[in-house]
Length: 79
Image 1 (cartoon, rainbow, N blue to C red):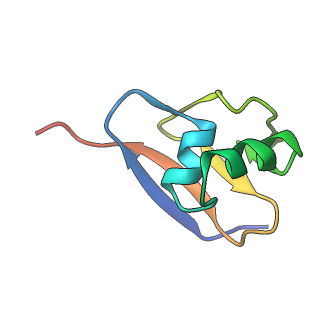
Image 2: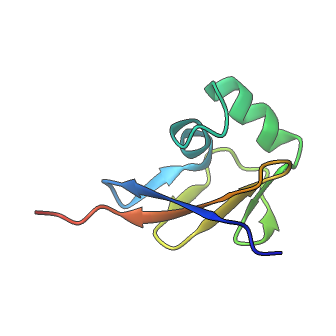
Image 3: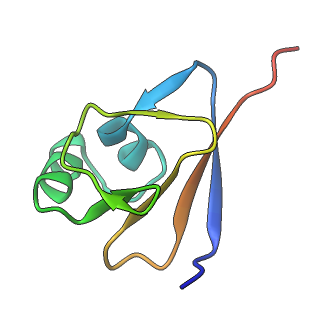
């Protein structure tokens, strides 16, 4: 199933999974992100991920069960 993708630009080399979910607006708080991850409702590149501190890098795709969109991470271009 192909979900529409939301591109999230990050300024560093990576962003932690729980921070990404909050930053992208998939959860309202960091605590909610932690819970969603612990319940096995988050996948990174098609595999369930239970590590809230997982480093998400450019090109990774994150999906959340029950959300009809995916997050694709892109590194912001330096000027």
